[in-house]
Length: 353
Image (tube, one colour):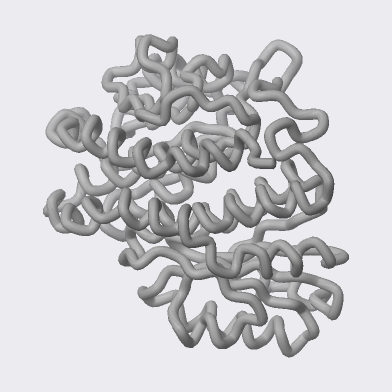
């Protein structure tokens, strides 16, 4: 039986195309808003936070701007007074009504920041009170796990990152191909069943990526944990190498996500070989033929350059998660103990990942 989550994954090609059409014309306004600002700070929670990780890497690698993640608790609990006069603060919330993020945006504005909202709901508090709002075009999302709202947030991050780059149009031809690549990955799920089998039988799982793919690794780990009720850790390549790799052994499944090109592809190939040598079953998503050969199970990813690969690579990961939940006898649409909106604190609603 098909799930609502699977149906919303299948709606992503259209959601991506509509979001690109809606947001690309906003590039001049984004550049104007960021004029004179030296850094971009992202405020988000859950899956939105993982989208922000991609935005941060894209800004630093393509736009030459410093990006970092801002902890909302600095605003909502510590109520710190910071000089944000040189900052563009980007607040990300699919509903645009998450109290913690809305309050963080107001705090940032009070402290001198320019504010940009990324949300799926026009007219929401976040959109209403931002200096500029990027409204994604995912449409209503009914399944608890974020799929199309997350992917359209990645599209917004790509628009932001390219808008602030010295030559905003450089990736436009590749951006035009994203909807078709997402559609191909949705309808040709090679390797997904084998990946589900590897994870179903695993005693423990880790997920790892690096650089522009780091947000994809964190989102994949989050989805596996919340939807499939399995203990899963998401690590950067570097963090995994710095200690946790010592506990990798047989019975463990390692999910690695990689772009098809870029300076971090070769290290990910080496990591796959190392983990396999320690007895882990390695499931690879994306990468190139050498990466595929180094993995016990390979799920093809997008044919997109590293800068845009996260917009496609999350799709096979979503299909693996949905399939694994059903294989475990779980309802992927309504993970146990979760709702579409949860609370960081009793008085502070937060979107579920």
